[in-house]
View 1 (tube, one colour):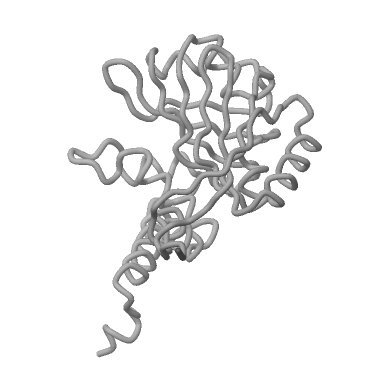
View 2: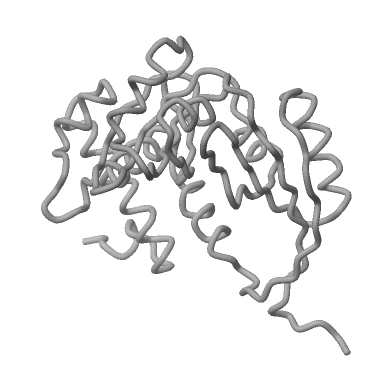
Length: 235
C-alpha cells in the first residue's frame, strides 16, 4: 500500500545540554526553574535574541542569576502567577542556533534544574548523522542521546514551513522589530508596551520603529492573503 501524501517520515535527534556556560542551562539551575525556548532570531547589533517562557519563578530572578555573564543580557518582558517570559540577548555560542543554521527544525529547547534538552527534526538518517557531527564539533560538551524515526500525519506545508516563509520575507531589521513587538505584548489588549518603549530598547526612533513594523505587517498579510499591496491599492 502506498504511503498517504499526508504522512511524513522524519528523524528526531535528541541532545543533552548540561554545560552551565549556556545561559539557559545556568539560569535553570541557579534560579530553580523551567525555561522553554519560544523563538530565536538575529540581533541587529550582533549575536541573537532568544525568548523563553519561564515556569517556577518570577522572571525577574533570572537576570540576577546570570548578571556576571559577559556574553548575555537578560530582561523579563512578561509576568504571570508562576513565571513569565524572558528575553536573552546572547553574544556567545548557542546550540539552538547551530541547529537552525544547519537547516534542522528545533522542536524542543528547554532546561530545568541545570539539565538542558534539545530535540531537532531532520528529514533523513543521513542528515541526522551530519547534524550530530556538526553539533559535537561546535559544542563539544553537548551529547547526542537519541536518534529516532517518527512518522507523523501533517500537511505537506507544515506550520513551521509557513511561519518560516513569513519570517523569511522580512529583512533582518523588520524581523527584529516585528518579533520584539509581538513578544513584548505590543499586540495585547491592553497593550503591555508602547512603540516608543520598544523603539528605545532597540535604539531606534519611534517613527523608524513604526515604519519597520508597518512594512513587516504588510508583507506578512500579503503572504497570508496572497495579494500584492502595491497592485491592489494603485489609485
